[in-house]
Length: 147
Image (cartoon, rainbow, N blue to C red; front, side, top):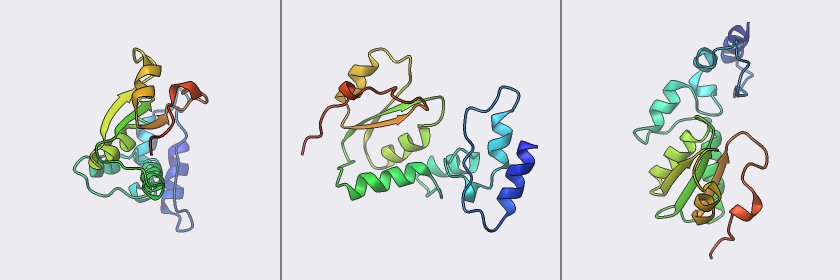
């Protein structure tokens, strides 16, 4: 039923984007649901086609990470050579990590079990919290920007 809903929305011309809120209930296979979404409407970029477009630096469409990259650019954040920490939950941060790598940032992908996570985040010039848990990254883990 959930996949059928994705399929109907994928076909609807009045739907611009679809966001699958992960994690899904245990009885729902996330991979099948994510694959049911039209890659052109995949907001998070989790469809295998969009992930494949990211790997060789091709442009994936409709991604939250692409929006985050635009915010960084418009804010005047220098990406090239910057140290970025992406605090990830399984796969949420991987599209962002790839885009940062394509912008020549040095990327460390972390998770909740990373040793000295506060220290890793504190050393980063750019911090992306894609863990899916509110307040996982604490304010004292993030240093003020050097301008």
